[in-house]
Length: 328
Ligand code: SF4
Image 1 (cartoon, helix red, strand yellow):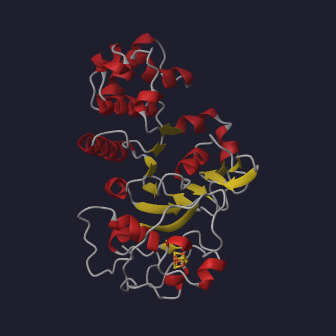
Image 2 (cartoon, helix red, strand yellow; image 1 turned 90 degrees about the vertical axis):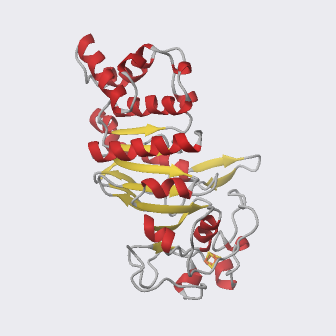
Image 3 (cartoon, protein in one colour; image 1 turned 30 degrees about the horizontal axis):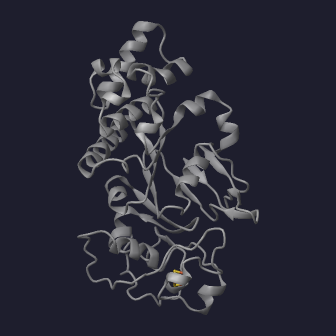
């Protein structure tokens, strides 16, 4: 059970003015064991910062990250916890050492955590891991440049799995790949989740991708979580105007019976965020309250499993409130 409590602040010094940028604020979620929570949003929305906070690469200036109820910093002091949490990065070209053979790349965590005694056991385990991700044990003799992008991501997954983790943070793991290869990697990840009981935090800018892998989806905007819902509910009954705008960008997605909310403009600078609701400069439903008051994340009427941060939803003045029992 993973819990990131709010508010998490990642303080960064920005430019000459030395102003503080809250990269992530007011983000709170948990991930039950064996499930996938995805965070989506445009570039700069803070989703990758959350991923790095969750695996301990960044420290929150306020707020807490808990792993099985234990503060992350305390938990990570224990090698056993570090073994159990691994990360898969977007770019398999950059994250694999080009001078190492694949067998050494995959074996590194096995050595680091003392998980295979002796050369024969190490070789056998590396062979098993390569087979598990759809490669051949013979591929271990090759170097990363001899593989395609999809195969390199399979190698990254084999390396991440080599320490027998239960929790994987996947930061845009298919974004650098062609669409057909993306589907293969997503299928592999779903299959591994079922077979090994893995828990995923999945980060992506692409709602169509996360739909395939998620139990729940969180939508982020300017460092804040604006909607969090069961995956299918988010697609059948999206509530936040920004979530609806993201949906409209997906070709062929049926929004039967739901009025579209047109959204224009650009994402404002996180260094100088708008007052009140950060989405108000782009939102056709914005009113005086939106410009003055930050909306809290709370369940809308009749959707107890959904959380939305929007005054219009709370006041039931969004165009098509969800039917009763829309949560699935
Ligand atoms: Fe739009 Fe207001 Fe809702 Fe923000 S709080 S998304 S500005 S209606």
